[in-house]
Image (cartoon, rainbow, N blue to C red; front, top):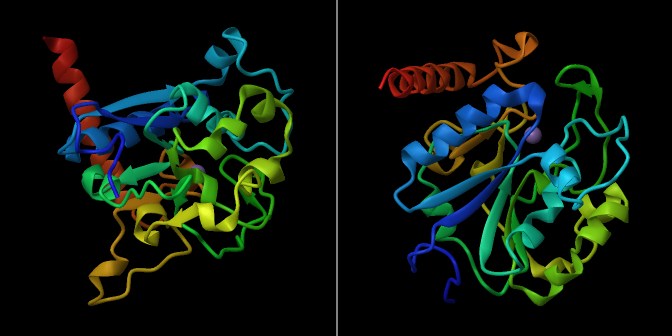
Length: 247
Ligand SMILES: [Mn+2]
């Protein structure tokens, strides 16, 4: 299969990161963790709800079941990519530990989307800063998705659909048939507190940690698993930021 917008042409690989003002630092560190390790050009854009509202692309009323500001806006990824090529959406609560090129190399044009297909029921009733956690099939699948934006089926994902369809329709990818959803190894959406590293099995070592319960940028989660990795990445980000500001 040929890749329409991966590492084989000169266009940067587009990455949209869900942005929430309450988690600005998480976004900055996630972004830093991608760019620092990437051997291919990437274009990283935060998905900011207030910007999309100002542009008239988003007008849903906020619902208290939405734990982040990008619960629905993430599904604008194909539209924001002009329904061309491939693009990735990822939550801001990810820490990348591997070169994003390895993920781009898995892209297969026969799929409309590709993601980690978790079989997962969360133990916690609440997450992050007390927002309500809801349980549904395909939980967490939409948190990191490679979108084949040029695929005919994704043309159905218009701003109108994103603004009016139910959370179930969108998060369960109900505009697609099952066989149009490709699978990516779980290590690319390694759920902190759920997925485990098996000693001696390199295929279980996370390439991207997803602090889905809340990460070390929240006081309550500063001692979570892989917190040390996130904190050292944050220190490095802060140092580089200071250096840039000094110049
Ligand atoms: Mn998340």
